[in-house]
Image (cartoon, rainbow, N blue to C red):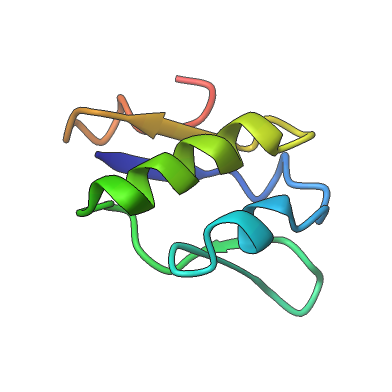
Amino acid sequence: MRVAADSDRCVGAGQCVLTAPDVFDQDEDGLVVLLTDTVATEADAKLVREAEHLCPAAALRVTSGTDDAEGQPGA
C-alpha cells in the first residue's frame, strides 16, 4: 500500500498525525509531512485509510499499487 500527501491542499487540521503518527507528521507551518510513503502492516494500513477519510482537505491518497502516478493526490 502506498500513501501520498498534497501539502498544497493541506489545511493543517492534524487529523492524519493524530490517527497515524507513524506515517504522518506536520512541519513548522502545520502542513502534512509523510514519514514514509509505503505502509507495510495491515494495522498501519487501517489507520492510514482512516486518516484519508478524516482529512478535511482531501489532501491524502491511499493506493494499493506501486505506480508513482497512481499515488499522487489529484491524479
